[in-house]
Length: 314
Image (cartoon, rainbow, N blue to C red):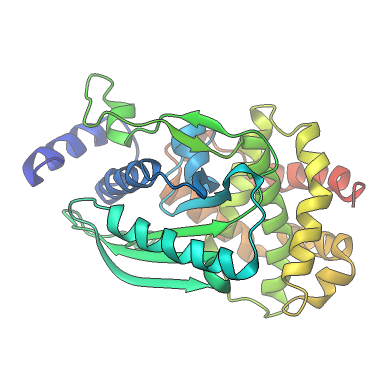
């Protein structure tokens, strides 16, 4: 853990080499420590597996952007078949363990929520600020843990701060190996989330989410890395079906005809100007070098191509 002066000095040196704000690099410093703390937690029933866009950015290094939210899947070990009551009890005990084991200097929980019989947990953490917070960043850290099936192989990867990635000679931490969801599984979840939620927002089933366009950027980065492959399309039907069941009451149209809703989302992305505006703002604020990012029209066209093939599997 660095003192305030040393942290500021390293951030200022980092900013000489990368097009980001001090607030972004500072927040990443605390995000990384939170990931380490979760990676170290061992439990006889469950394993925590790093997931989402932050995993793509910091572990797989597929996307060149800041990702601030921390998503972990809770995986049941050894394919154990829990009764409902035993699972509720085991998840509650795991929450208690996480709370007692998760110790990062400077991070203070300000909100803790458990839902769906403990299968979903959210923790909001306050962290100290040297730099003024950008309007595009949350003023806190969001940690989400979700009990989930994991369909593809897990990889053990190392995670570094932006400071250490940019200043190669600097080593602040000795990082543990972090179990990570595969790029392919993350990609299909992002595609399903994007193509369901755009039309859900249009129907006022969900509040607007400016940051949803991150999935457009991420999917194009994954495609550029040639990792939209057979595993992606094989999983499409399973993940779409799971979402259709999960959101049946909130989004009945998706449950009845997900293909039609996906096409509606694509049409909105293509024709409703606000989505392009969100995308341009996202590139400006969160991508390390926005000049290298794919143009919006090309990015959406690539999503359309992916979607056309994926819809055929449904």
